[in-house]
Amino acid sequence: MRATPGNTAAPTGNTGARLQRWLGKRYPVIIDVIVIAGLWQFSTLFLPPIVAPSLKNIGIAVFDIFSEPQNLLSLVTTGARIFIALIIAFVGGTTLGLLMGALDGVRRYVKPILYVAQGIPGLSWVVFAVIWFSQAELRIGFVLVIITLPAFALYIDSAVRAVNLDLLQLAQAFRASRLQRFRMVVLPAIVPEILSAWTVNLGNGVRVAVVAELMGSTVGVGFQLLQAQSVFNMAGAIAWTLSLVALLLLYQGIIILAEHRLLAWRPKGEIQ
Image 1 (cartoon, rainbow, N blue to C red):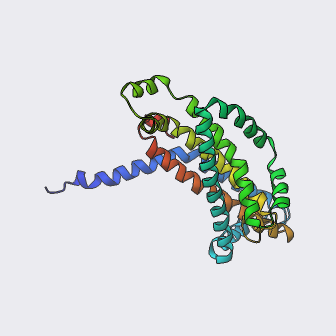
Image 2 (cartoon, helix red, strand yellow; image 1 turned 45 degrees about the vertical axis):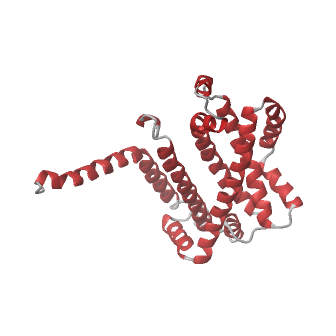
Image 3 (tube, rainbow, N blue to C red; image 1 turned 60 degrees about the vertical axis):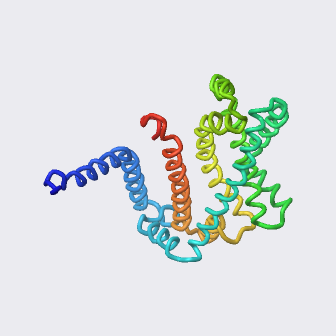
């Protein structure tokens, strides 16, 4: 069939509409970034560069991070440390959460320990790790896992406890096995809480990783921030902080994509 002018223009119109919707959702963020950047640049007129470097110098420092292999290695190393540690914490936390959700005896003994672990400041765990472990990677991994694992376990325990009993009884009435009940009833019900736990722990992991890397690591964003502080390089410190924020946004973007795929059954208004 021959294409008509209307059919030819339709994709362009759809693309323009999607772009407008995308910009509309992010309009407040764009305005906030412009205002903050403008106020920062204005402050450079009255403050010395060591306190408030110009946006140009910050931009150059950011470019150096992503253009120099050694600097990019530090960013990738921090990202890998966070990812591996969160995977380990997720596996351990999921196991504990499922056991607590299914067995009251396990829940009574394990939950207080998780609360105590959550109450210990991250800096204390860093000090403990420095005393207990000689290798920097073990220190960083231990601190990341011990701080993020309790959140995974508590989120999943709460989700398992909230599963609708009517659905479980219905599955049991249809003679579904334990594995089938878990796969078809429990797992879909706890997926939203699992994604929420990942979102929370990503933020915690990024913050804790930087603190942990200050203790003995010779590569990573935390080490680079320490180097910038030692020579009073404020532009470099801000650039490394922004790179860390970009890493967090990348991971959060992956979580959002997973949320849209795994929770596609939800009404559109429930998935942001």
